[in-house]
Amino acid sequence: MTRTIQDGVRRTVLPSGLRVLTEHIPTAHSVSLGVWVGIGSRDEAPAMSGASHFLEHLLFKGTHKRTALDISAQIEAVGGETNAFTTKEYTCYYARVLDADLPLAVDVLCDAVADSVLHPADVETERAVILEEIAMHDDEPGDEVHDVFTEAIFGNHPLGRPISGTTDTISPMTRATINGFYRRRYTPPRIVIAAAGNLDHAAVVRLVRKALAGTALDTPAAAPALCRPADHRVRTQRAHTVVRNRDTEQAHMVLGCPGIGRRDERRFALGILNNVLGGGMSSRLFQEIREKRGLAYSVYSYGSQYADAGVFGVYAGCAPGKAEEVLDLIRAELATVAANGITAEEVARGKGMVKGSYVLGLEDTGSRMSRIAKSELLYGDLLTVSELLARVDAVTLDEINELAVELLSRPMSLAVVGPFDESAFPDTAR
Image 1 (cartoon, rainbow, N blue to C red):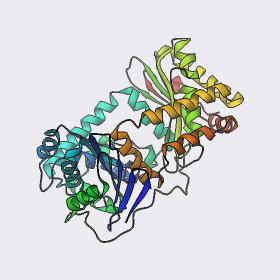
Image 2 (image 1 turned 90 degrees about the horizontal axis):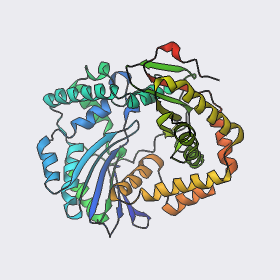
Image 3 (image 1 turned 135 degrees about the vertical axis):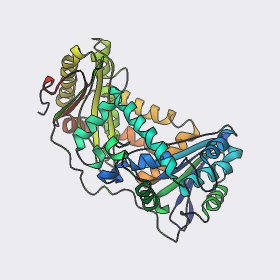
Image 4 (image 1 turned 180 degrees about the vertical axis):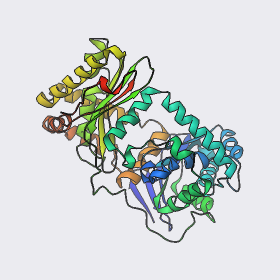
């Protein structure tokens, strides 16, 4: 079944339930292609933590038709690029090639995702690579602190676990358990194949059908999977402080609280509020902490949103001796905004930042491909650019300030990575 979603964007559902979406951009000379699977780290049992990321590594290691070298060399031989990434709720395998080489990209990516061999020797090789990746991550306190913060918010819930897993889960994971996860979870109803660029939709559908014929993804008729349900609340932890002692030159800190889910209509208001608080060089936190006082090189706020939950946090990296002063300033600014709100002038600037970053982010085929894939996989519909900008414009000052009161008055958890012991910071719950 094929239908036009909006100008230039078409959607076909194959009998297996796999969806193919394309956006025709006639002025482009390239095509970005992505195979998106609605499975991520939150879908793993505790003992399987890191399986999605492990599998992402392994699917490029060889199929019945291609070796690992073939997969990379065939794309690179035409000047293309291919890669993958894993998130908490989905995994993406993507390639970017000249428009004339789209048939090759479809065949290679579909082959890798549908027919990977998972050779035992490759499992051991990638296990070593992932363990090094985990160690490298632990050596980057500016990255580690975000995992510490997320765990402080969600605790033992899968959203609180690191995407890469841990040495305790990756080390014993067997080829059989990874393959079982692969075959149970990578099913056509959970998969969206998206492409954007100089292409023909019907031709892309034919290429996908041909590439998947006779593979494990060539399955009996089924309906596409619904978007991940958001009809229950994820349990979060009581606000508390977590300190990871590391011999670092800087203190890395995240102060924050549970946020809102991605289907919450207030997400547009949150985007504006976030920009005003810590979304750029003109934001309150950046101006107060870096520009006026020179206390931190990096300070920003952010929100992460999932189907049924979210987090809001403020990150700062500063000299250990300045940590308490920086935290006091962050808390004071959040309290001020919660009590007094933001101004109409700040709202206008925040809206401009949201709209500008969105539109400018759609200037290449990769971002256009991601847009249609995420809309299908995560939201179930696709807003036009005009509709999205109108939603941003429709947000009122009162709506933003009401959200600020609710969000910024919540008890705050604190994550710290640096040369401190547990007693260095008092409990931040309030």
